[in-house]
Image (cartoon, rainbow, N blue to C red; front, side, top):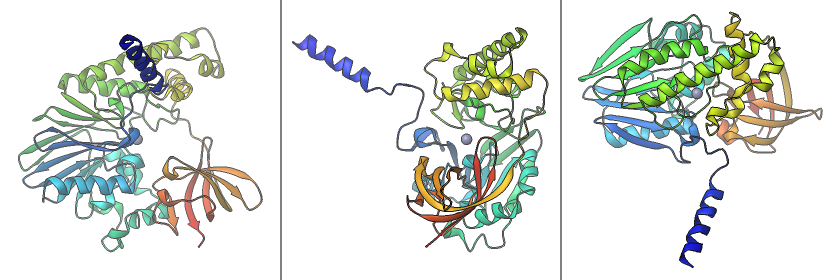
Length: 386
Ligand SMILES: [Zn+2]
C-alpha cells in the first residue's frame, strides 16, 4: 500500500511540473546575498535581474528592474540593508527592461554606460524624455527640466570604478554589431553580471535587427568572460548561472551556427531554414519560440549582411482596451471603427491618465500614437480617457 501511494505521488508530482520545464525564476522576486555586500535582485518569472553592491561610500546598482514596481522594490531592499545612498547606476544593455528604472536613482546618482548606448540616448525623441520625467510620480520635482543624459558618464572599451574599497571592472568586447552591451566583473567576490550572454538554459533571442548583437559578438563576449572563472554569473534574465553555463552557451551557439550553415550549403531558402531549424539537443531550455528568429539572424550574419532595418509608419488609434497581457506589456484593443489591434506598451511609452502600464483595465477608453512595425505596433504615446 505504501509503495503504491508513493508511486502515485511521483506520478502526480511529474504531471504538475510545467510542460516546458525550462529555467524560470519563482513568482516572487528574490534579493539574494551572493557575497559580503553583494546582492542579486532576481526578477520574478524571468523579469530582468539587477545587482546591488554596498560600499562605505555609497551603493552601486547594476541594471534597474523590469517595471516601476520592481525598481521601487530594489530600492526598498537596498534601504533594508544600508543607509548609504545610491551613488552609481551601471547599465549593461540598452533595453528598457534593464535601464528603465534609472530615474528613481538619478539624479543624484551618476549613470555609467557604453558610448554606443549614450549615442542612442542622445537621439531620443521628445516623448521618451517626457515619459522619463514622469515615470516615477514621487520623483516629479527632481526630474523637472532634467535630460536623461545630464548625469551620464560613458566609456569605450574598459573602465574601472573603485568606490569605498570595492572594485568594478566594466568590460566591453568590441564587435561591429555590439549595441553597447557590457559585462560587470567584481573581482573581489567572483560575481559577474554577464548581461545578455549569461543566460542559463534559455534560448537567446538574437534578432535579425541585431538589437541584441550577433551570435559572433556573443561568442567573443563569452570567450572574454570565461577566463575570469566567475563563481556567480548574474544573467540579464533568469536564474543565476556560473562558468559552466557560459561554456554551455558557447557550445549552443556553435551548434546553431553550424546548423544554419549546413542548410545554407544545401541551397535552402530562408523560409525553409526558419521552419527546419531546431535545437533538439536543448529540448528543456526556455523560450523555444525564439528559434525561427535566431535562424533568420544567423542567416544574415553568415551572409555578411548588416542589421535588418524595418521602416515604421506612425499611426493613431482611438478605442477601448479589450485584453491585457504580461502586466500591461501587450494590449488587445478594439478601435472605434471596429478594428482589432495588438499594441505593445514599453516602459518608454508616454502614458497619460494612469500611473503606469500595470494600471490598465479592460474597458478603458484611450487614444494612442503608435509605430506600425513588422513585428509590433509599438505605442509612443497613450492617453487614457477619464
Ligand atoms: Zn531584457
